[in-house]
Length: 133
Image: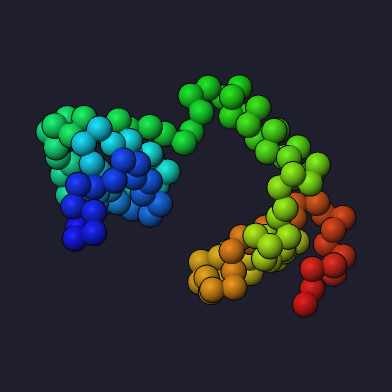
């Protein structure tokens, strides 16, 4: 509040809890954009829609509106990884075979500083010890 008393032009709540939206709205400047990345759970407080209206906040989503667009984006993202345009070596920090899914979720739920993304390899033929430590 001291450093940015007028708020921000773009606010992206990343916490899943619904109350993140209430906090995000408080961070919005006049005519800001509120990007719905997180804040998708139930709220424990009421949302002040008048504040949203008064500040003329636009609410945008990160989700495509149509399934066909979602499928296209997934395919394009996969192709970018396969073609080397996106390097996943540093962001995928842990890979588990499907048989170790419980271990993968346990690691994901109790994260550490060196864990970024946990991936589960669903190809049963890859359950050959290649991911054992």
